[in-house]
Length: 481
Picture 1 (cartoon, rainbow, N blue to C red):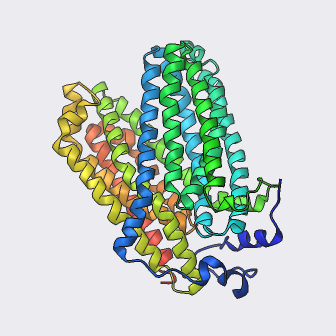
Picture 2: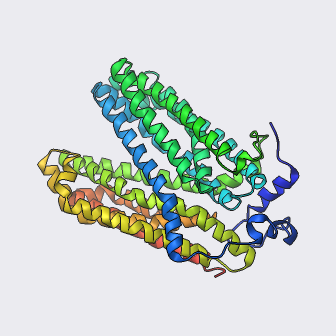
Picture 3: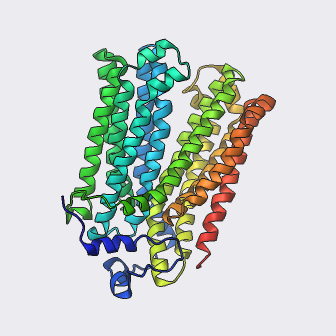
């Protein structure tokens, strides 16, 4: 394995500015960093329309990949649901630990994105980030795998029925290995997005979905392997997708110029990425943990309300995808703008401009999606449930669903902007406060006002995120405007 030269390490350290607007680190002088090829002759600022178009071109493949992933998840749940109630319960128990662990891993690895975006054309500067990201993927994947492998123990401790525990079989252990493989896939996918290679990232997602849709029904239903077959299918899919992602990263980007092995770990570099990414991972853990708490609060009200809540969550998930895709697509634009603003002394006006372009792209798509749902509410909701009582309840609450999604879209963009600036702590603090209050209020609000009051509380929490993250982003970017 080839280690980095001292010059490459210096370039990677130079990319680790402690905070936006801070001084350029001492080891980076005008003769080194300012004369780098990607900064000596900065490109002229594109028009706003071209900027929106550029972000759209990167966001569309990401959006398609996310939709495909959601479809693959629905197929998995549907197939296992036809094998028996105990099997489906075992799957749900495993996923209850797998999903949060996976969110933390993905969030931590996302910390490499701004470092990659700022050196997108320099393979020597990218090599240390690639190495550090791989070691972080290994560490986070092992930790997440231990959590998932503990599912049988946790199930017994919390009193899960013996029938469900028996149905687990080897599934948690296969999923633990799949999570480790997925951490390497996530590492490569995040780097591809940071390099602006959204089409390659989409390819990774489509390969994974295609394998899941074919392998899981084949192994579970045709070969009769039940939940163990699903675990084997997911592990094979994860290994294949991780390999595809790493190959695309090393052969389809500037890293192909000087291919490298991972090299010995530089733990300071690994920590520098983790310091940016871990708050994002913890934020995702808080969000999905509290949403799980909301589901439990609704389940106490009644079956109709619980079913309606699940349909509304599914609608929010699909309609929110454009904001997620646009936000991730914006990160490379904002990260490069931040680096150029620091070097030139022009401040972060271009960063704010890129964020505005992302909002200009995402919000109309979200609004159009919700308008279509509003106009065609009956057939759309009918896809998820044939129960007229559930459909009527969801239809009545469409306005608050719209408010939840719009607020979520508005808060997501400054959150990605803070990621691009390598300052993700404000995101963590904002989520801890807003969703912490939502968690405390969930059961009393649900008991007092039912599903409607609970979703209005959810909307207020999202509006708090808009104020918190938007304020944090504006404060940082105005420091040297």
